[in-house]
Amino acid sequence: GSTSKAVPAAAANRQAVRPASTTTSGEVDTAQYAKDIRAMADELTAMIDRLNCDPIIVRFAWHDTIQLASACALKHCGGPDIIPKMKFGRKDISGPEECPPEGRLPNPEGADHLRKIFY
Image (cartoon, rainbow, N blue to C red; front, side):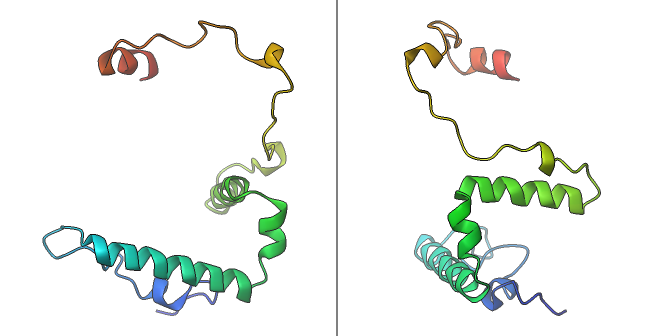
């Protein structure tokens, strides 16, 4: 099928079932995996240049851009529009009075204890 112009050509041609760095037995070829990651990073950089996305990336940090993309995907798939309620960026604290009080975090006693608290 045809691919969107926004999708780098090499990324569109990758196998959907497993990356090129995975052998038929499922083992990962780490050298090839590193090459695949580098190639995809280069393709993403080229796409950003080609589509002039720099103003968006400069305005938002990567984590904010990913957060916005996930909210757009949610809306596109028929979910609620949460974009107006989102807050981007992070707030740094100005002093120790804004830190959580000592003892607020649980004192973990191993993996089972953490599972009990967080699951």
